[in-house]
Image (cartoon, rainbow, N blue to C red):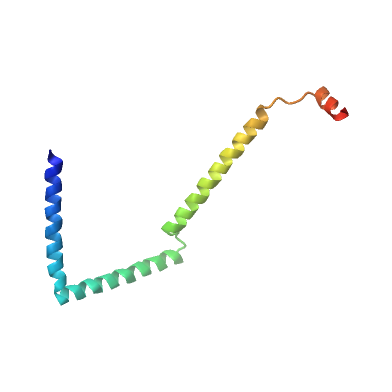
Length: 104
């Protein structure tokens, strides 16, 4: 019962926010200030990225790549362990059986 009321309140809040933000953006000074803020944010982001690169700090995409490589290696190790276990579980032929197969 509380969910429909909450949904209705959120919808009205979104409508009010869109109205207010639309009216604000109609004013040239506000639009210009917002544009300047976006340019400033972009420059800060570039500066931070450059600083991280100089400090040899990995980016999010590099971490994702490394994570994928580690997961791939882990699956290969698991497969190799299973193969080793299968091979070690097979009964080993006795020395007589080995000699018999060599003679044949």
